[in-house]
Amino acid sequence: MSWRTLVITKRAKVDYKGGYMVIRTLDDDGEKRVHISELGTVIFESTAITLTAYLLNELANNKVKVIFCDHQHNPYSEICSLYGSHDQVLTIKEQIAWKQQTKNEVWQRIVQFKIANQAENLKYIGDDKSYNSLIEFAKQVEEGDVTNREGHAAKIYFNRFFGEGFVRHSEDHCNSALNYGYAILLSSINREVSSNGYLTQLGIFHDNQFNNFNLSCDLMEIFRPVVDRFVYDKNFDKFETDEKTSMTFFMKGQVKYKGQKQWLNNAITLFVRDCLTALTENSPSLVENIEK
Image (tube, rainbow, N blue to C red; front, side, top):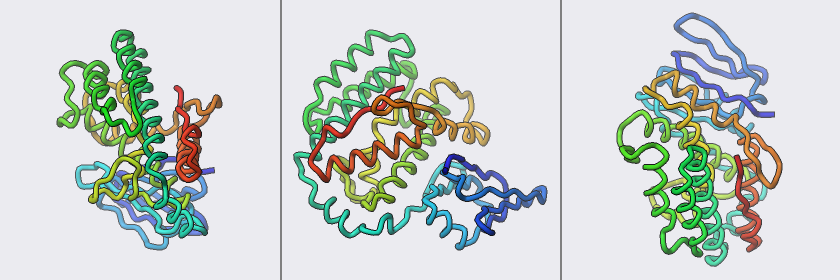
């Protein structure tokens, strides 16, 4: 079972041998081996890492998420397999044929659940007034969220949850941590979409011609508050190598999905599968929320 998140921060040579990922660090000449079957995610944080194409192929074959960081140690790119399933041509045809009505209804549910999860975060910090406001917003979400309840809720949510002085996308430790966590989350969704044979580029709401992950950006929304809660609890006063490594642990948390406790990775797998089935079979009610 793939459960480990491996972060390589030092100069190293990394290759494949007999089912193992072999890491030879250049600073201390140490060698470590990790069986690929244990890996869920590998993050290459340093740009001074040499690795083999054979290893990358084996990681892709085993559906291991591979994330590369830039020179500032921030997630920058990832490997996304071209072929996710044996019947991918069929699934792509189904994806292209998704009905607009169904996409609107699925997006409505996703936005409702995202706002509800943001409300739970506000309840967690004791802000009952803002919690009630967001619950009302969630109830007001229409098909396709044509009235942009998501945006209105966000204006209240971020200032209440992270403080009145917080500005999303500004350059500070909190935003850096959020962006790092969201990037890991997006990579997890990408893996599930691809492994089910669908294209990450064709979204149900997101439709940016320069975004290769439109569908994944749609499906990740209900999980964003999980990252938010983790960052809030950590309360970083800096965001350097150790803090970035600690951010990967939010993926080891548990949530409830359909009444059963699941590791977050498992919940993501089940949720993405249900969303794809809902879109293909025109059954939006299959899409359900997670609970902390």
